[in-house]
Every structure is written in structure tokens, then in C-alpha cells.
Length: 196
Length: 303
Image 1 (cartoon, chains in turn blue, orange):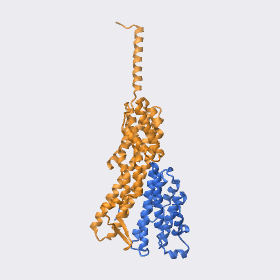
Image 2: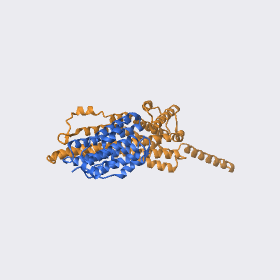
Image 3: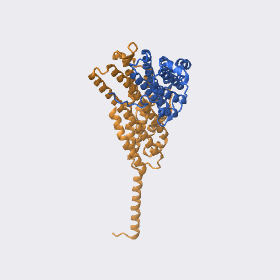
Image 4: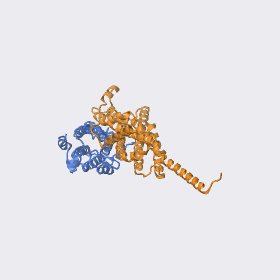
């Protein structure tokens, strides 16, 4: 019924170490480094776009699910939208570093990063969702600090979180699995926002 | 009158000398048809690019509007189609990232145009014509100068523009062709690399647009729950047509990138060649020029 998707990126509900390793190979996002198949900004934008679609797919598949609150569903929709804005901002930075005004584009990217962490912080009800949010916040931090290894692992952790089976937040805490990277969205956001 | 022995020798000498002069004269005016063909095809590639360039910010704005047309309704825990009048939607299309993309388009398009002007000059020189004055060059140089920060590619384009200005003043001719190519090769390599990267950004923008389109149409289809089959079919037809249009554009952008690779490789080959008219150079250049033709056609057909 639905036409096949033509964009590159991760297939639904699977982790993508190959895509992530491409990002890790590309080097720091300073606008000048080039990898054989694109700059880091381009690769990151592609990954974020794929992530945005993954979150969107997940929401569509769980629209009628009662395990997610309406607030979480709205926050997930907000998250996929911010991921897409972030991807666009990265393309703008890349174009600016080919063309002219890098400063304006970087300010735009920082604003998108800030919005993204705020939205991720609103996801609270199910461990899976918390893990996605936590991964996104780590990713935002990694991009701001230009930590390439962390960018790769954060993207991987988000894909893994999306692919994981849903679990009640309380049950996960009891089992000791916790959130990705051991940080709650609220805890990481405050540190990240101080950078802007 | 009969020729004596010494007269025959003298006549033979003159005949041989005339033949040698003819050979020298012919060699002094070599055929640079393949160089001309290659440079002309390269120039046609750059001429087809501005229409692609205009779609950069347009793609960003389309993605933005697709994103806004479908909203999440927290009260009902589902999607809803946004009730936004088209005029309001247009007014909202002022996303900072899209504005930034539009802002930076100008310098990159100018770099593409400078590359085109340079290839046009090469084509004229290889055709043994004077490089003539082109008033658009002044505007091009100004467009590049207005860029706040000159990156390597734009700087290289600026260097090419300066060379073109010099060539116009000095009235360059064909005998300068080889030195012109050697002198400008590094600039051509930098400009083409920058433009290739720019075209890759366009591909990413189109991928993002596809992602937004997916969300809009799949979200809209989820609202129907299969109750209104004819409406769903219409929606799917529209969805597929839009996806196809994006796929065609991505192919055209890919054609532009491939064409730039061929231009860079062909120019490099010319700069390294000891003789521009050697069989090897002619054959390689002809293959580049032939390879450019279908790519140019694809770009023109799409935009």
C-alpha cells in the first residue's frame, strides 16, 4: 500500500553500525574535512534525517498504542520534527562552508540543537522512549563539542533504542538496565544547554 | 629546355623545402577540436546548473511546508491536517536554515558561473579565436567578492575570474592555451570539488524532503483507516508522483556531480599533457566530452 522509501539511511527498527562508522570515519565537523562519500556534516544530516523518519515510523506504528501517553506521542512527533530541523541546519552549515556565511548557519544549528534537547527532555513514560531521548541529548552534546566518536556511538544507541522492545520505565529501573549512558534526559540537558 | 643535373638538384631541394614548410605550417596550426569539444561540453554543464541551484532553497521550503501541514493533536492522541491557509503557510516559510541556504546560494552559483566563463574562454582559444570581453564577468567578480568569508573553492573561483579579466585585456590567443590550462588547473580542481560538495548537499536536502513527504502522506493515510478507498488511492497517486519527481531531481544532481568529475579529470589530463594534440590526449578528452553529453541532457530534461 505504501510506496517504498527512496531515502538512504537505516531500515526500520534495526541498528546501523555501518552508517555510524561512516560518520565516525569522516572526521570533525569543521566544514573542511571530506570523507570519500561526503563531509561529516552531510553524513550527519543524512543520519539525522533517517533517525527522524525512524521516530516518525515508530510513532505511526504506535498511534493506537495505550502504552504511550498522548503527551509522549506529541513529544515524539516534536522530536522527529526537531531531528529534521537539525538535519536541515547541518546542510545549511555545509553549504555555508562551501559558499560564504558560516557564522549565521552555525548559530542556526546551535538553536536547532537547543530546541532538540528541550523536546527530548519531554519524553518520559516508557524506558524505550527515555532511551531514545537520552541518546538524542548525548548526540546533541557530541555535535556541540565536536566529539566524533561520541557522535557515532550516540547515533548507534538511538537506533538500538528504537529497535528495542518497549518496557515500562519502572520495570527497567528495577532490572537495572537504566537509560542509555546512564543519564536521564533532565540530567544531561542542563549541562548541554549551558553551552549555548 | 632540358634540365641539367645541377638544376634538377636545385629543383628537388626547393620542392623538399616547400614540402617541409607546408608540414611546419600545418603543425603550427594544430587541430584542437577535441579540446574545443570538451570545453564546450563543460561550459554547457555549468550553464544547466543555475536551475538546479534555485531548487536548493525551494526544496528546503517544500520540506518545511510538508512538516507543517500535518500536526499532532495531543487532545485526541492522533495526527490532524493543519488548517493553515496557503498564504499563512507561505508567510511561515521563513525558517532560519532555509533562509541561510538561500543566502549562501549566490556565492556558489557565482563560482559555477565563473567556471563556465573559464571553459567558454578555453573553447574560444582552442578554436583560435580571441577571448572576447564579457560584461557579465564584472558582475560575477562582484558576486564573489560580496561573500563574507571566502572559502577555498570560492577563492579559487575568484582567482579564475581575475585570470579571465587579464586574458581579456591582453587578448590571449591559441598559442597561450597550454600555459593557460597549467596555470589554472589547481583553481579548476578546487572549484569543481566545491561544486561537487554543494551538489551532494542538494542530494541531502532532497532526502530530507522525502522524509517529510513520507511523514505527511503516511500520517494522512493513517487518519483514513481504510474507510475512504478512493480518497486513499488519490492520496497515494499524489504521493508517488512527488516521490518520483524527487528521485528524478536526485538523478540530475548526481549527473551534475559526475559531469564535474569529468571536467576536473579532463582539465587535469590537459595540464599534464606535453602536447595537446597527441592521440592519447585527443582520445581521452573525446571520451570525457562524449560522457558529458548525456549528463547535460539529463540535467536539462529535469530542470
